[in-house]
Length: 244
Length: 244
Image 1: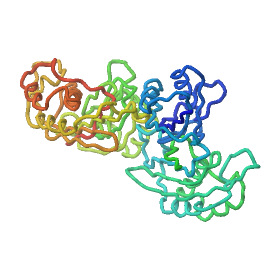
Image 2: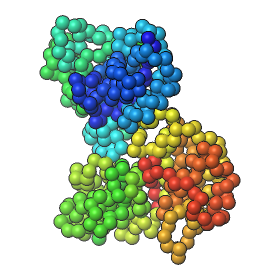
Image 3: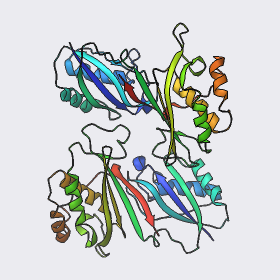
Image 4: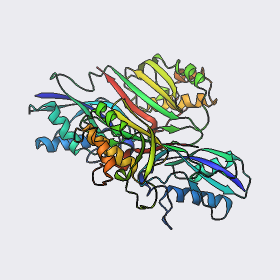
């Protein structure tokens, strides 16, 4: 079998997320599988690194696909980009070892959240950022973010259903930058629970608005109480990088 | 009368351009006039600096409006941003001298053109840039652009209808930059004829692709022949600045 690693960028605004759901057409995985299936003339399944939610974007999602056919990397990439909708783009195709698995081999993930922090709306980023009109106190947001860094039980910051699996995740870094009206929050960790980034960012926004004090993050983490965290819109969230 | 200067940003993708056309709702001028008319309870007309075409964007269009009412600048801005569609944003409202006229007082204009110059599409910029798959020779584009700078008769690079008015315009500068897959062309001049930026940029792209030699720009300008120039899509064009 020939194993190919695909790097994929998408505007998630009009999709029900990455993961194919039965016969529902409107997922990114589904769109890519349909084109690959057309390409080789039989049903193809791909494995994605991250199951991004409905409305979430990706700058570099990774997937792998096994094919009987030996094809040139550029041939696969060109075929996909010719037939995929314009809001999904394959930025790289690379032949990889037979055992490469996009989900199991992912060592770290980076998510990026974009906040448009001006009193007036941004017409170009209305579906690609969260508009917060009131100025956020970025220093307080940074102070709060530090409490997330390290290994913690993130039960309070997730909507994960299974209680059998571990809720412990390691956050390596959170970097917060201000640039031309935007505040970007970049979170790198060994993995993320369902809705974890959106609940973390939603809570950080409450801190920036002065509604929550930075050190309350510590109490929230320890509480395992899911009713305390905020929840930020999918529009502003991007899967930025997968490390292997 | 109280005269207010409005600075306006818009995503032109779904509009028939700036200028109100009879009763057609779908223009940016029309949308703003409707909201202002609602605000004061009678029909209001505004004067825009530039009549951007269908699909063309603006980072800082300028308009002025005269009102009998003395209103706070922030009150007008907030009312507009509350009731305008999300793809139009008023970034500033400023009380100005009674004689300020957004069109007559405009001294220079800057247009920006964004080209996405990678082999794969950019999902986030598909309606806000022109995708050119083949790598452009940027040095040749710069060389060609130099021929446009200065005072010239731009008949060959316009679709302006009236032949009575002067076709002479002064281009102050053309700056071409490469950044993360994009090539941006920034053109500043004392004014632009109908379709002039799009015909200039379309021709520069032909140069970048090697289809036209840089020094042919000189011959084209002198020819006054409208059949020679290229024509770039509205998607990539932004009105960036008006100088007064």
